[in-house]
Length: 173
Length: 121
Image (cartoon, rainbow over all chains, first blue to last red; front, side, top):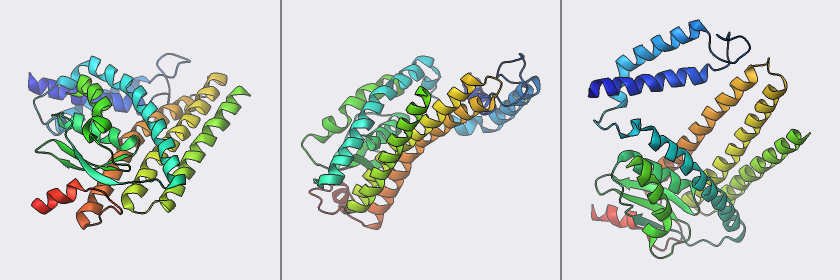
């Protein structure tokens, strides 16, 4: 069963990528719509089958299929909204610091309390895109992040990652 | 006409933030603070540049439905947007980590937990 799930998720990913990249690029099944032609569909399925059979054990190495749940992907899309707001703030923050030169940098250690690789990666990327913080290093054993903070204040874990940890725990943990 | 105005606004926002990244690259004192400017501002500016292309392609497809290559362009730009969102912070992370491993320490730093940890090891 695990082998089938592994094969199936790789197959879906390969098929989706192929179909997205060839969307509206050729003769369509239905006249006047930007869909795919028969030849393209057959080719997409065969390529996806080959890719899935060869690389399924590389893409899904662990026996953990929690990301097959579509609800998690929906929450991930919703998460882009608070992330975008934080990015706007980050840019005005950088603009302010470029003009005034008001910096007090340092590298701090935070322990967000997330366990999975995917959630730590997402948290590290979100932290880099948000105001005044840049991920420098990850301690994979202790699940800790080292963060360059442009204006060091007290209580780093809560201030830097508190609002993201809540969101990421909902869909990636 | 409205679409043209939206396009100009989006393009202006994109260029302003990319320019801000360049100014930050010149004004900040060391590699880490420069990465702050380079990552955040260029990611944000480039996102708006992709928005510009998507609005343009969408409008052209809306006006000329037979020209399907515009829809194709919108979707390819969306894929590029996702790739930028994922790879840009990761690249900055790799640069910062490499700099710290080589021994470049942040200037005027008030504390450095990573250097403390490396000293213990």
